[in-house]
Length: 494
Ligand SMILES: *Cc1c(COP(=O)(O)O)cnc(C)c1O
Image (cartoon, rainbow, N blue to C red; front, side):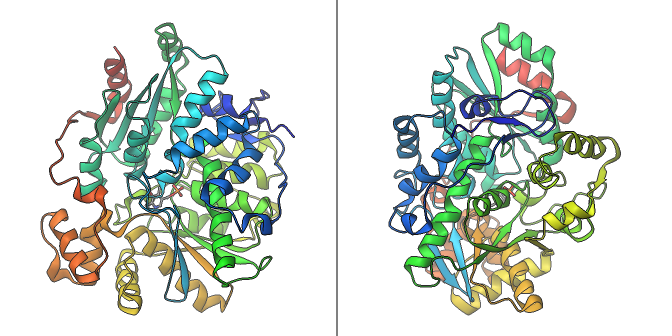
């Protein structure tokens, strides 16, 4: 079955998967979704003997139907190689009565590597397939982790340039250092005087500027996106939900067919949407537990049926989840209103004109599989300490938001279903916060020194991605105001 993609907002055009990957966002501002949802051609049993790459091929081929087997396998081979510091790619660790799925063993030690290691390969393959001769310019807004993972993925990839906008004062010192030391003659990193939502809205408005697009087109340039709205990011993320499940089967934690919960620390709703897609493909899922930090717009949404972005933006210790407009939620909205793109478009228009929308009873019933919670800053710190004290296991603040919400869920709902906590960053990416939670006396002004001390205490080694920052040269110093983002792009590409 060929899977074609269409917009969530009504544009009737149908796109192949490769065309949707190149374009990123639909022309009407909607997100690409499969016109018909693929049907699994495998049994879970079949996946149990597979390694990560084989699992990836089995899942991804269902969605990327216009890629040949050779093309897709080559992309997968190039992505999930020794850039990851373990052959398992996404190992599971048991602690405090839960299974932690570690998605942070890639080049930039955050879960974004899972998709951004493969996206550049999918994109350059897609460009070739579509006889594209233009240079692809990736525009990315980042709350910290996407930026570095995208820079690392696209650096020196022929026929591409990448421009990353990050909130100047809204990322961790290590995240910032990772980005501004990025090598590659095709990489541009720009600090914006604003928050992540400002960066994201700025990038969206550059994308929807048709005038600019046609001017760039005549210069042989086209824009695309590496943000989690790209279907080429979403599809690779479905893989590790199946892979986590088969690992639990292998370690006899569950029997094939038994349901599990996934708890996902959520910002833009990409990761947890991939879990939802996995369940639609037949993965036995009981609850998808959506964990927010103090920016609890998603908690309120699941609680009340009202999505309301009109609230104060809070900077937290889990910056990659400091988001008030969860872009990927639009895909869930589209699916739960019965793939009704007119209805989806009208809700999204309300969001941009009134700052809020409300879903009806039927749609609320359709999200019954989701359970939502949030963790405030104190609780997040306590959870880091609790897990370390009980198991000697280090978790980063994002993972701790999820763990804290899961412990609440377990207490309140008395649900004993085996649960996977999706672990999205290495504790060393946020060494200052993690150490402050465990033993504040070890915190130094220098995050790299703090990381060393935390390692001595925990016996967990500091990953190369952090140690290599010590002597890295700063290569990017450009900053701009929110209103000047478009001009900055123009001058970079001039
Ligand atoms: C991006 C990110 C998240 C949020 O994932 P979404 O797909 O945006 O919901 C959580 N934790 C970390 C460490 C991240 O980098």
